[in-house]
Length: 125
Image (tube, rainbow, N blue to C red; front, side, top):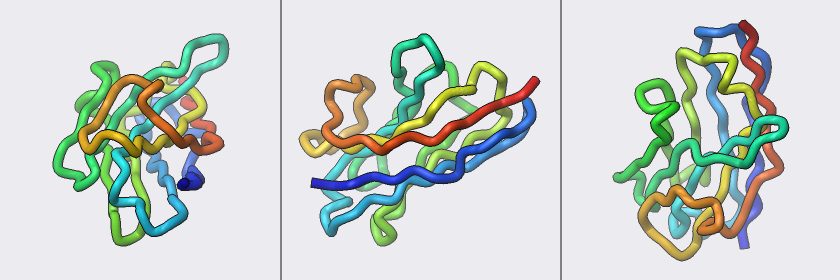
């Protein structure tokens, strides 16, 4: 089992940047593919980005492609989401998630086994 803790959320103006971090407990972090999801008020939780166990493969939602970058540091048991050119529609609670079954990045939230508590990102216009 792994525990995930997000940090780095906050309030930013449109066009600004934020970097989310997700720290994982345990010694098996490198055996999990990792993903970021987000949920805005009244909406379903949606896929944002995912990264393979090794970090060599990534996947992005069309809405964030070219603006967001997912990365990981297995030595630090951490995964990151660099968010640039933020828009008001990026406002949501952002969750990191761990997938213990697949080595490749996956879009479907039902594939993920463990979830963090979420970090609020608010983008003002």
